[in-house]
Length: 142
Image (cartoon, rainbow, N blue to C red; front, side, top):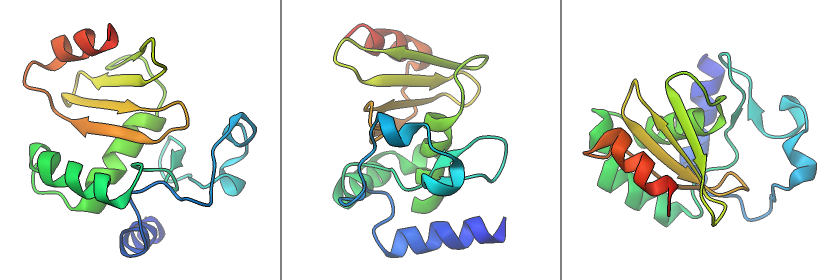
């Protein structure tokens, strides 16, 4: 647990929250083991902590706009929560739809969080829409 917190802090200091420009995710890396594909194995889900938003600027903009919707959380926790929702299996409280443009959307009924990410796992947005599941259903038809 302490190790993963230190990792998150290091990511925040050295470009965490953005997609690494020298790391590409492809179908070849998607199936690799946690230890060699940038996964964190803390908890029940594998978290791709090396893939976040497309850029640090986009990450910071999204955090500034939506971070308070999740309570008093740090930038690192905001990013971690988005990554957890992205990387956990869909089902139960987590709804998932893939739009015609390939963007994957998820909605957590329990927390009210909405997430959209690209097939390469780059996060596009993470927030709590005012109209909750209705927003998710509308977005899935775009």
